[in-house]
Image (cartoon, rainbow, N blue to C red; front, side, top):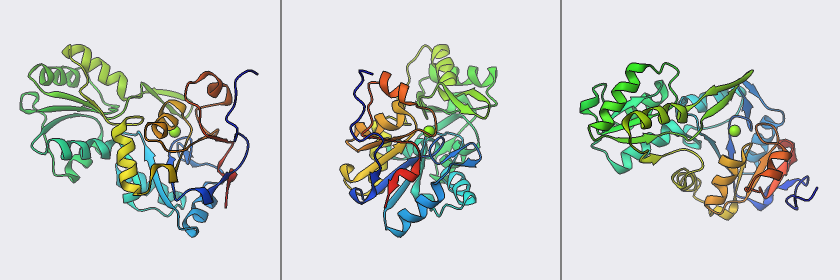
Length: 271
Ligand SMILES: [Mg+2]
C-alpha cells in the first residue's frame, strides 16, 4: 500500500495530552438507538479525569435538549450546554447576526423549538419572512418548496443547517437537508447565503467558544472525514477518526483529509 497512514494509526490515544474532547454523535457515540461499545466507560473515565466534553452533531432534527436527553437515556452524564446540534446553532447564528429577523422555517420540531428558545420570530407567510431556514424536513411538500421559493424571490436570505445530501438510517440512507435546500435554491434561482453545520468555520468556532480551551489542547473524535476530521483541521484541533461509523481505512487512503489518529473504537482512548 503506497498511502502513508498517519504514524499514530493503530496506537492508542493518550488522553493526558488533551484537556477537552469533542465527540460526534451518530457513528461515534451511537448508531441510531444503540450506544456503541466502550462509550459509557470512556465517558465516565473522562468525567473522573475532569476533562471537558462536548457532543457535536449536524442533526437539524435534534435540539440541544433532545440530544442531551437521548444521551442521558444511554446513561451518559451530560448537560445541555455540552451539546451542539445544527438546529441549535442555526438559531444561535440568527440570534447573533439578525435578532430582528423573521424566519420561514422548512424543518422539523427541533428547529422551531430552538428558534423559540432564542426568542426569534417565525412565520408561515413567505412574504413576511426575512430568512428561509432549511433543515431536514421529512414532511417536505410542494407547497413548502413553493412558499420558500416565493420568500426568497421576495428578498429573503437562504440559511441552511447542514450540508449533508443524505444521512445513514438503520438499513440504509435517507435524503438529508442539502437535497431539500438544493431544490429550494434551484426554484428561487438564488444561492445559499449561510451554511451552519460541520465542517464550517462557524461550527468550529462555536465549539471552541464552548470548550474554552486552546484548539491544540482539544481532540475531535468522529466517524466522517469530510465533516468531523475537516472540522478539526479548520481550527487547528488534533483529529481522531473512529472506525465505528461511516469511514473505513480505504476511505482514509482516498481522502485528502488525514486524521492525526485512527482508532477502532473508544477503548483505544487510554487513561
Ligand atoms: Mg457521525
